[in-house]
Image 1: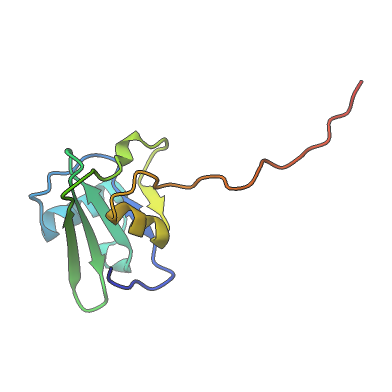
Image 2: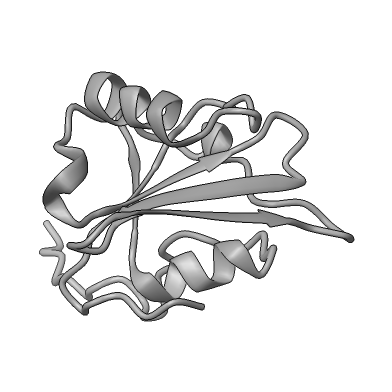
Length: 121
């Protein structure tokens, strides 16, 4: 995986995208659907309808990078099935999981819920 700075934000488009799209067409999605500036250095991820292909668009400061991956087995997570509105935000670790084809992308609660005292009447 190409190294990203720690402070990079990762946004995943929640709708399936035609994987024939290249830099300019994906850039239009970033400015219209994400409402973000393409040159901020964030990573923008797109998943195809069949979930076998994904692309990421990233400005590294000197040029636009287009990362593409096609899985030979399995499928990418379907961001359109995740609850919420707007782009799905991931950490760099979750991005790595997504590009590995893991279905377990998203935040999972690892600790039990906080205990609260209830008053008996």
